[in-house]
Length: 350
Ligand code: GLU
Image (cartoon, rainbow, N blue to C red; front, side):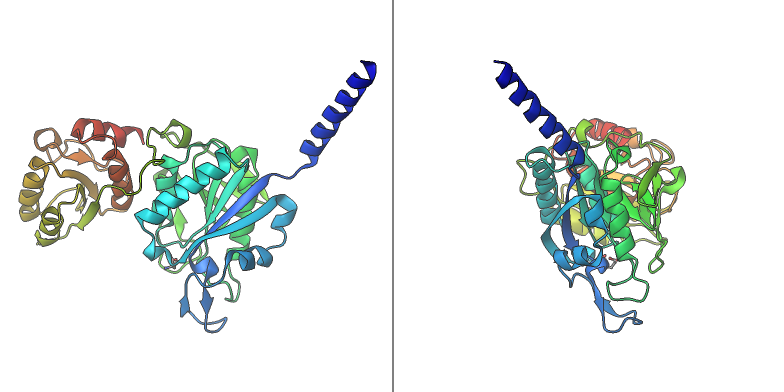
């Protein structure tokens, strides 16, 4: 009996010391983008996104092997202008599998910067884990002078292994900063310092391979999100219509004719429509196509029942979501309900 206890204690001590010394298990899922892009010459601005594979990305930053037990997989290899619902669904399902079934401690996704904010927000609502999920990309291709991809990847892995990044929802890690999926926006077409956290600012930053958190996102996300894509193989169809002076109603009419499930307006000012567009929107809403009012203004909320009487028309106000993120939330909302008041509630909570 004594001998048995001794062996059991030894086995326990060994397991504890092994698990203490084991590095966190991090999976990098590569999807393409400029971080995997190659230009004709190292000084050229002409390049093609999504050229090099996951192993080349990992090999370019051997320092990440000191931070974590790293493995990678290539989901797709595209410029993120070609990101679509099918890849989003695959990505969300794969991350849930890695974190909830395969024992990974965190996931890093390499991604083009053009639509990174949309993918981040989609994952923020559909990943069912509080473990770190970090998106990273770059503005300069992999063979550019002073490429920003390697440092962004290193920082993303540093964030993924950090206990400070647990429970923060999905984050983007670019240019030493950590940005919240809900508020992050790409603001500049070519600068490395392109991502901003909106009026609330950044969530934190990475310095010397360590994550420092400045604030916590206060919207519902990940484990508190009620959206579940496990059984979905397609998403409701939602389009965006851009507002401007003398705006043509034709794009909105085209979405109506194609029987889209929802339409987001990137309206002028506080989510206002041009009168001809308003007429189409009113009829569309009455026919069961959900209209969400957002704004083409880069900052400020689209307020409920302000110049537009949403309660009368059953429109939904996007509040603090920009049009592209309002589209993501509307797609997921329509998987649960077609009740405009319920949908408005989602826009208040997420
Ligand atoms: N269009 C590319 C993409 O989004 C370039 C942007 C980038 O990755 O920086 O994949």
